[in-house]
Image 1 (cartoon, protein in one colour):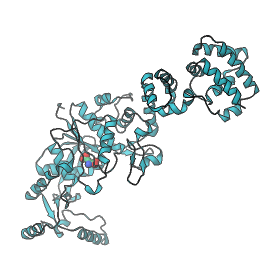
Image 2 (image 1 turned 180 degrees about the vertical axis):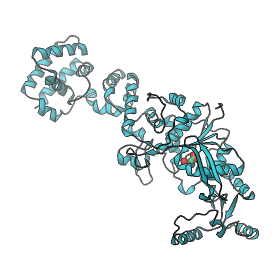
Image 3 (image 1 turned 30 degrees about the vertical axis):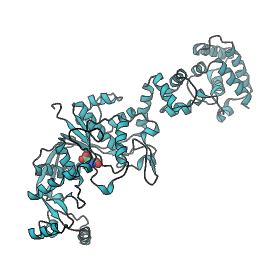
Image 4 (image 1 turned 120 degrees about the vertical axis):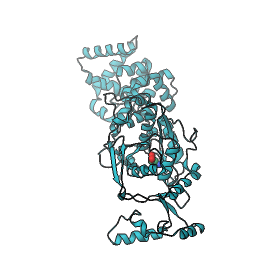
Length: 503
Ligand code: GLU
């Protein structure tokens, strides 16, 4: 493929928040453009005013920004093919629909909503529940194919509402090659006369979409599988205008973790994971949770998304955005639906957390934590906790005893291990610690081993007591690391407190 010819677009409709399937579509477009030094465009398709949701456009743009999916052209960025919001270019579409009428490839239809409803009802009664306005039924409807030119002119003069419909050719095989799905063949007898231009003066998605793809010189249309049924119509529209059709690539669906059906916006919070990149609150106040607010790193999120429907063909799983754009090819995108895996998503997040240097992580902890600890202390906490955490929040909650003294002690552990002998041992061990001149982890560990062997004890008989005294819990990082981090004075004081407070 020659460079600089690749122009792709992500064309969301602002009808609600962007689902993670949408983010994946944007991501694949972005990666494809990067790979071939092409251009990645964002175009907002807001011609359906009845489905417009306020705040959705900002949400979409903010989500992509959070993910690092930066467009080359788009709303708020500009570019030579703008404006990039369809409602801002609405004057542009009608002449194209009229051109098709003049050429006999489209027609005016004056049927009212009630008339259409009546026809549908009648057809239902006659056992045809899926009535369509098509190459057969159009001849008995009220349109510029059945009315005389004078009647049509009169209706137009009287400003009778109308739509413009595609005059679907009869019995023609439409064939085009989809990069992911291979050859697609559909007979036009199975396609209806889709509305291209609506009575509210706006184009439909179909017309606006192909006019803009043409004007914006889009080379590849990479979009979700749900648009595959529209592709034959789009192909025919390009043909009708005599324009070159972009190449199509329809991406596989995202499926629920059990593989049972499409992942929908309600599944997430019901099954315990977000399906949206950012939190979204509906006008009714309902909250759909987002990956950002759950504490995921954008890198982990997009790394996971990249693998939903694509694989590099190697064992490598961790990819930066940059690496993804080098590795990405459409021919490694699968046809089959991609099952979303919440555990794998957490795994990616863990890997990203572990890969962060301690000083970086220290800074991130600082942003979330109100303790007076300096950065060096926080770096220490980062290094102690990062192998055990998935989110930064885990470091704060599971490692709470690194920030402050424990206020409670684990009940089950007390029941199991705490007794007079344990108390005596803890007192002795405190003396050993007190007498250490080098209070570092190696020294502490060595003394601990001696302490046990002198008394013929094994680790399990005393380490949990030591842990209970210093942290209040039964699990965590190495006790020698923790003691080293807390320092001698603090360790001794915590042991005193434990001796006082434990039953
Ligand atoms: N506006 C359509 C959507 O909401 C775009 C489909 C396409 O990419 O052609 O997904």
